[in-house]
Image (cartoon, rainbow, N blue to C red; front, side, top):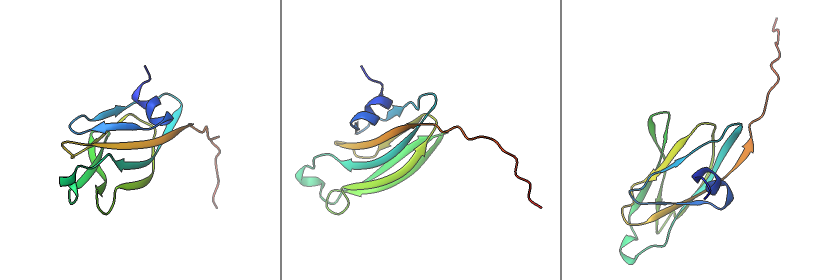
Length: 115
């Protein structure tokens, strides 16, 4: 079975309500989180706001807010090089996240003299 990190890179992942998803970065790679969207809506969820969270370096940060009627998806351009956790506050539903990974660039360290 693929790790959550690999699944996120291949086809996206489903984060169910009350079940945070830990994403492992993988050595030598960085992960770009590209999009989040709401799963199917039940009739009574039209006005409900859904907060998206990332837990990174022991800090819980808000990624954005979705709603079934006005904002069912949101694009991101977020880059992670360490493990993180995705979650949301929707009790009976899912949010789908997608992204991709690239090899971490190796920058040559050069000294620049500024006069």
